[in-house]
Length: 272
Image 1 (cartoon, rainbow, N blue to C red):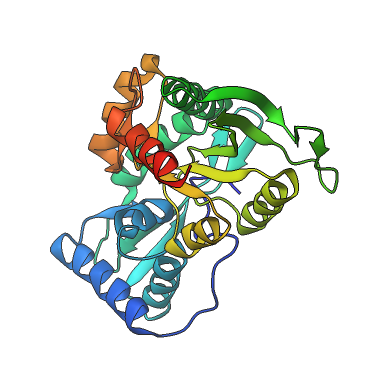
Image 2 (image 1 turned 180 degrees about the vertical axis):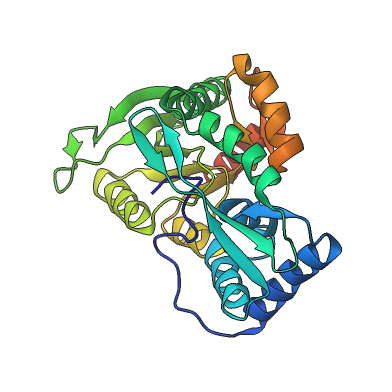
């Protein structure tokens, strides 16, 4: 499923009308009441709410608002190379003319969904975090690897983006620069890999729910969250359009801010 067409995370929890759901629903209602001409796509609303609510809670709230007629859903096919994605847009029931705003967002979503852009985002984040971590004295001892010090993971084809080492401690590192969460199944497998290879888990992610972070911590690892999606330096104009039109955090930095790397480096020193 693509970043710009999915409404929920693959590992969402079952719907329950609990206080979080009710608050999330109320927050979305207020957002549209403030501007009944507003149009958002589903991932965009999940990002707006993610500091307070898991993506799947926002999903449940949105479904509820569609069912009672507060919001109307518009699915707009977007052609990209040899494939078509289907972003879901949501408008207030009083909005009679949502098409202009949808067309504006479709253009940027099509650009963001290009394979060269998505590959560039992932590659750029990996390179920058590799540079940032190795600049603190961590040795890079493996790339796209599933083995460490004679131990090898063979149950699946999964591997780590990098394996770092310092002070005799190895880290299995996974870097996720996508808008959505890491899939829970992948997280569970990578944690099992760390246990098998005797590595500490290091998950570097744009965002992650607390329940996932707790899984990493319980396994003896560290979750490093960096918030703004990373783009290549050549995409400065695209990043400005993302911030102005779509309203989520994005950046094309020359390096990872030292404060982000400090969080992991300090944790390592404390636990080495």
